[in-house]
Image (tube, rainbow, N blue to C red; front, side):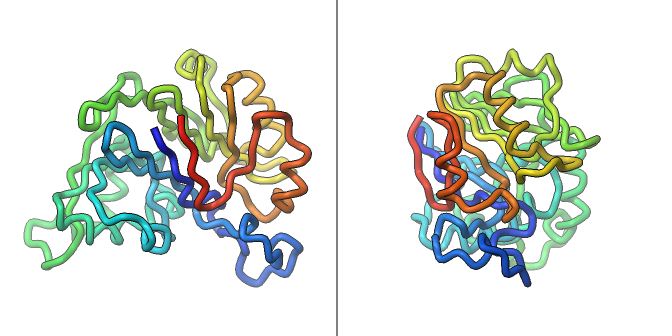
Amino acid sequence: MKIKFLGTGTSTGVPEIGCKCEVCTSDNIKDRRLRASVLIQVEKKKILIDCGPDFRQQMIGEEFTPIDGVLLTHEHHDHVGGLDDLRPFCKFDDIDIYSGAITLNALKLRLSYSFSEHKYPGVPTFRLHEINPDKIFSVHGIGIQPIKIMHYKLPILGYRIGNFAYLTDVKSIPEEEYSKLKELDVLVINALRIEEHMSHLNLAQALAEVEKIKPRKAYFTHMSHHIGLHEKVQRLLPENIYLPYDGLEIEV
């Protein structure tokens, strides 16, 4: 399995518009973060997790081949704002989108033109698949385990594929879900900033979750400029815990 971090930033991206802090003005490419998303290649299939407003920019340099499934964690704009830019991939086939009922219903409202009876030529076309969060589902024969997590008071989804798990926008994990996260080779989990936040894990909380889950390696994502400079923070992290950067590719 290959995982590419298309984006590792929070909803405002980094640099944040109008900000002149040391992170937003850094000339280190690792301090520039598009909205969070990963592209996974497994068994010759491509699976995208989240499709934010930077999706077009993120995909310009990628090989133009079918996307076999899109897994959405939740309906917030920084995670679904790029769905319209999937339209070139509809040349291959309609796009299969997998998520919970709340997210799929939100998409029908936001992208109503894609679900109308008489569609305008060229609009993106989707097949929506509602997930039962308590059951493993399949994308082209690839088993995927949903993970129920809480984004403040909003129930959202993370995903486990093989020994890889992707959890973003976590504030808390229900105790019964930890059994789904045993013996991971790689965990990706959000770490928004140093300070406490209402709806996201901060760095210390993310480190505590890694300690509890005990993956072989962990990577933080959905980071704001308040996380600090990439190189400085990386030097402070324990062994086998990493700040990824946009474009990083890893194998599991």
